[in-house]
Image (tube, rainbow, N blue to C red; front, top):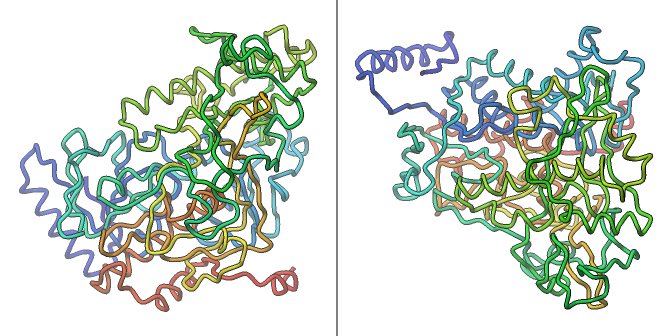
Length: 563
């Protein structure tokens, strides 16, 4: 139940002995569990936070709803959204170095020869022999590495523990005293960390947050809010001019499924829309490892009538994805009607556990139905149906979950309104960041937010954007800190303080691990110095981050010279 991280520190030994005495004297039904830091959530950010705390000699417990740790990194997103690899340091970089080590072993290539795989990653090579990193990987390999981190650092994890979001967070004068799970287990700590994608602990603690898109006027941005007529990718209908009505052209015949009849809003205005979620499937065509896509029990081909009309219009983008080792693909959304379940996730961020379960099931049903449609509906050209039928879910992935990913891709949910709000101004270099704790570099990437009917009477998607920064950008310390008058002992490295569009870049898995490590560093220093997290000297924090291989600034010329 308890986790002691060091036998070399006299202080830790004394604390450990004291805690052991407490355990010995406690009744068998004891439900109170203490640590210096308690992390809620099992994401990659949670693991990085815990590892850093362990390395800084702090007692830490992860308590999480998940049974499988690692978040999206171990749940299908193996074709890493990378950006500039030069700004990924610390524990985040270590993770990808562990991936590299794994695939250096020929035994790891059990479904294809290494030389057959190639070397293509997301905007870079998959394998970097100079940095000894690998940016593409199978889901089970990522989970093994996270579990290895946990074991090596003697980190205690209490799994399948669900925060009582209604009355399970005890706050006194802006300080979280304890958190209680639905099963009654109570956790006390000096500092708490919310490492969930949803920001559940943050919200239950009374910290302010935002769901949806802010208007451009709120933070003086260009790319936030509604963006009608902006087509940065191929995930829209553009000039297809497809009718949204059951009888094409007849508005009295009713609207096809999965199209909103609500007005889309004026460009630049805010709304409650959330960019679409999907599952990052791990698929394969390796003979002997294929689980065929099955027809769902509640399959309704009418749900995909809009896709039929896309095919009729000559668009056939359907089944793609980034190559990951062993003849597998990390399959993502592609085209105007694909695995992104547009508009069906708006309630998810603040929904009850029961309602979230319903939303997740609707996404699963939709996605499985889509896979079956692609392989069997006569509107799909025969050559595509034949090709897709050779593929299926990977038999050796997610083996206790029907080979389906454990985690839906929560691209955004709640976003904290913290001490500093990152906006597109900081991402694009228009405004300088004063207290960096890490860096990002990926495009401000928002998937579609809504599917609506244009004034001309056609269907269209809106919200899909990809705005590349000119250079890597710094992420402010205040993005992981609630406002001090709201909460004095909580850190939030995943549902961070950023506008919708800025979060679209920050939300990448390598960055979550970077921010997790920085959160762990700040927590450890606050405990050592007996200070509030807001009062730790930034200069000292920066020194520790740099010592631990975090990257806080980027000089292109120096990087080029080092090559």
